[in-house]
Length: 469
Ligand SMILES: Cc1ncc(COP(=O)(O)O)c(C=O)c1O
Image (cartoon, rainbow, N blue to C red; front, top):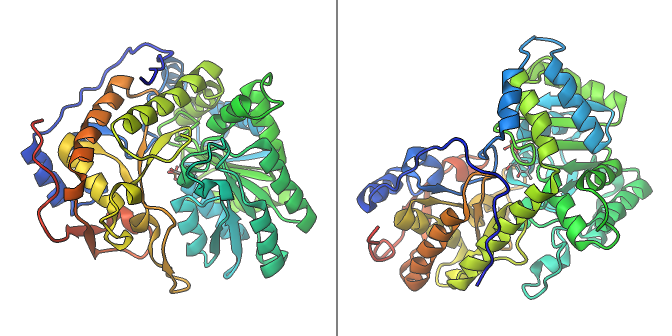
C-alpha cells in the first residue's frame, strides 16, 4: 500500500467544485471538439491540466498582496522581487515579465538568427514554439537513461552531453546562440537534472564559448531532488543548492507560475550588462517599464515571497511525496506511468496503455478524453498531438518518441483524497481500455496546435461503458 504524505499546511479558504453529470460531461467534451483546453473550468471536477499558475497562495503571499505598490516606476515590491531573484539565482540583472513565454520571446528575439540551433535537454512546448517562430531549430538532447524503462536513475532529466558535443561539432558553435537546460525537465517526465550534469554542460559551453541559460520554472523541485539523490548535497540547504545551480548559468528564464508559487509572472535574469540592456529595450516595448514588466506591484510581492517559500524543505518533501504517492496509486490500479516520478506531474505511458491506437490517432488524446468523460478529470496529451504535425520552418513531419498523458498537480491545492478519486476513475478506464478509439484533427493552427485544434472521434463506439457517477 502506498504511503500518503501529509500536507504541511491547513486549509483556511475553500473553493467549491462539483462533478457534472455524465450526460453534461459528454455534451461538454463534444462541444469542445474533443479538446479539453476548450472545456469551461466550471465543468471540470479535478483539474490536472497544468501546475502552472494554478496553485494556492499562502497567507503570507496574500498579506503581501495588500502591500502592493502600484507606482509606475520604482515601486517597493520591485526591489524585493529583484533582491530575491539576484540572491537565489546569483545574477546581476533582473527583468520582470508577465509569464515565462514572454521571457522566451524577448530572449529569442534578441539572440536568435534564422537557421540557428538551440539545444535543450528537452524543450517545453512554448520554448520550442518561440524558437521556431524566430526561425530557429529546436534540438532535444535528453540523456539515454530516459528511454530505459527499467532504469530507476533519479536524474533522467539530464542533458545528453555527448549529443551536445556532437551537435556543436556538426553545426559549429557560431550557429548555436545558447544552450538551454530545463529544470526540471518538464516534457521528459518532470525529472531532475543533476548538479554534475549541469557542471558538465557548463564546461562544454566554456570550451566552445557558448551561452548557457536555464529554463528554471521548477528549479526548487530540481534542487530538492539533488539534495535527496546526489552525493555531496545531503547537508546543503535547498537555497545553497539553488544558488550553486544558478551560478553555473549565464542567465535564467523563468515562469514564476510554477516554483514562484504565484498565479502569474515570470522573469529573465542575466549576468551580462550589455545583454541585459538589449533585452530591456524589447521588454519596455512589449511588456512595460523594467520595474514592473507587465505585472502588478502586488504580483511582484507574491512572487518574491513564493520563491522563498518554494525553498522550504518540508514543503518540497510534501510536494514531491504527493507526486510519488499519486504515481504509486495509479500503478496499483494497472496504469503504466513513467518512472521514477518527477516533481510536478505523473506522465502516463499512453502508447503502452493503448497499443491498439496508432500514434497518428493520438492514444494520449483518447485517454485524456476518457478521463474527462468518466470522472470530470482534465489532464493533457503530451505526444503526437502536442509535438507532432509538420514543422512550419522545415516541412519535416515531427513524431515524438512517446505518447503520454500528463496529470499535473497544482501546488498546495488538491489533497490526497482528490488524487485517490483520480486513481478510482483510472481503475475503471483500465478495465475498459480496449474499447477506447482514436481521433483525427479537423482544424489546427500553425503553432501550438494542441491548445485550440478541434478533433473528431474515429470509428466504432465512443469508448467505454457509461459510469454510474
Ligand atoms: C519548462 C517550462 N518552460 C516554460 C513554460 C512557459 O511558462 P508560461 O506558461 O508562464 O508562459 C512552462 C509552462 O508550463 C514550462 O513548464
